[in-house]
Image (tube, rainbow, N blue to C red; front, side):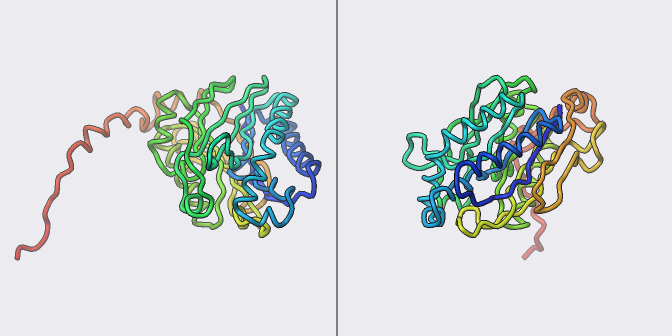
Length: 297
């Protein structure tokens, strides 16, 4: 399959037609380049807050509620484009209230047959806890698709190996890591986490970040990153583990051809067998000893 992952710019939109035209063009471009799976970033949907006007867009709570109100319309657009172009799409995530007092950070996955499901973020950053009051919600989900079994680890979630490992043990071979980071350090934390997940579980990890400045919204005012697709640095894959990567802060699709057979081959007979040997850890960490090496007093 061919995977397309976006370094996606946050833009101001004066009307729905502007937003619709942007998403439509992005999807069309990836589909025309032969992509089967398209990945948009975390909080990429926050640009919808611009449709509520400057005052609402400039307020954290009002902007989240404005975006939430437009999610049915945005999801319908993604669903239509997935069917029209015969592609799978992870839509840009958004604050979603869904009958709850506080929102979750939700990424919706769309299949070309018209079905859709979603993954909510599991572990909130300090910003999400203190300023947005976003809450974790829902279980980890395996998307069983015509392309294979796919899981989603949203931004900060990629930095916690047990979340990814639960998905891997449920059969996932491709992890999607949409992100939204406001610093180079933040981008690298997600990137390092994503690459570590690819190494330890011998799988594909797809990283899609936001980019650009949007001073009109405090949630996505600064966005730094470069899209990339990672695999295990082992036979059949690049020595760096990087299958493809974009230019920092340059809006674009990044593409890579990915073979699940290559994943299965490296899991079965790689130079190292991280996925298999993962199971040896519990007995090794069951008891920790202390070797005292201080000077006698």
